[in-house]
Image (cartoon, rainbow, N blue to C red; front, side, top):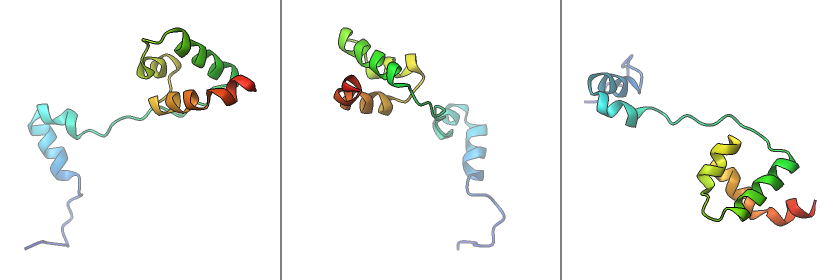
Length: 86
């Protein structure tokens, strides 16, 4: 039977499991997000040039260099015409 009046928090079982099984701790921890950073137009153009000149460079590596998320790199590269014309 399910006790709806329980005072335990929903994450309590995960915390206990993570504490008792260190190998599981890394899986259950929430992923840390990068702080939001807005690149200037100049930085976006530099990023685009870097990606064009270094075809073997991954978007993850570029994201790390500029301290932004991979999705932001992808979005900038998709809109590169807009940034290069501006």
